Image 1: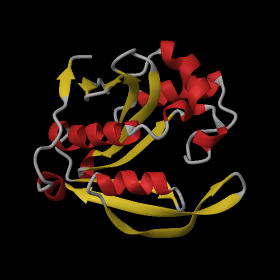
Image 2: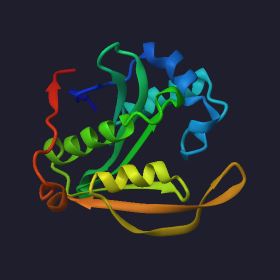
Image 3: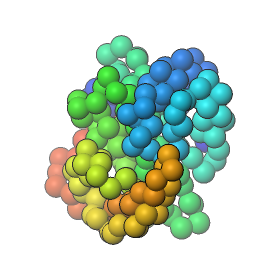
Length: 189
């Protein structure tokens, strides 16, 4: 999928490129990052990064590299797994450990929601996180998502079954959020 560039006050969301591979290995490769996600391996190798870049090009994916606007430095990723026949997507994100606690995940996820509803005309976006990941819980609540339940021992990570919390937001809920909503600027890829 060809993605636009989205700019938020502090971030640039853009397509991934081969030049991101070293930063992907370094940032996504941190055990702390992998521990909070299902699809990031640990250790994370150059081959994992190359496989991810190929997957990110699939038509049903809108995966953005998240970079700092001030420096262009990659700091994480945010994306949507889109099911166009159902007009919904699953939101996912990760932020490199050196950038935790700065609000970048929320800012990037908010831009991805804007893209999902305004550009892709989706009806619903959902997200999941491993139970106990209170940082992700706070992010999803701040985006206006509602808790929809817990899938008990739904996933297996590193030999352990993990409960998964499910959150979602409908287009009408997103549209009814108090103004002013942040503005995102799109630029051609």
